[in-house]
Image (cartoon, rainbow, N blue to C red; front, top):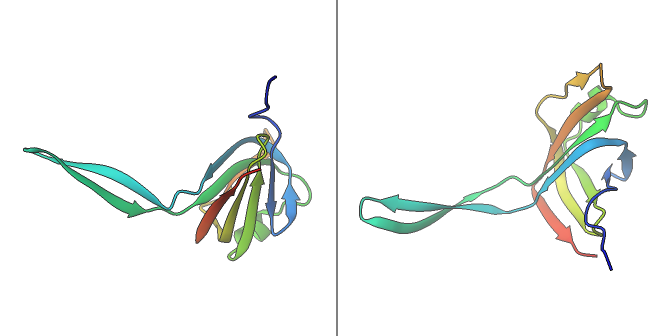
Length: 121
């Protein structure tokens, strides 16, 4: 029996849901490890903190305001995926610029936060 692993998804910002158009990327890792190597071989690795994020492409519907999105500085952002998992980003802000593609009626919004977690179904 098959199990759905991709497809329908939802993103909410402080319980307000926006209409997803296409891509959705979630990253809730707390750190990144990078190997360290010298002339004598592998010495070990270093850990660097990461900023968790949820980034998605949305349709520019009436309820989505570029100005309002730009003012978000302390939100809870949730992404619900087709595989039953939910990701939560806490104390989130909108990051980067928000550029509207007028020909397609879409824009990509990236939310970064203080912490992120995966809630398994």
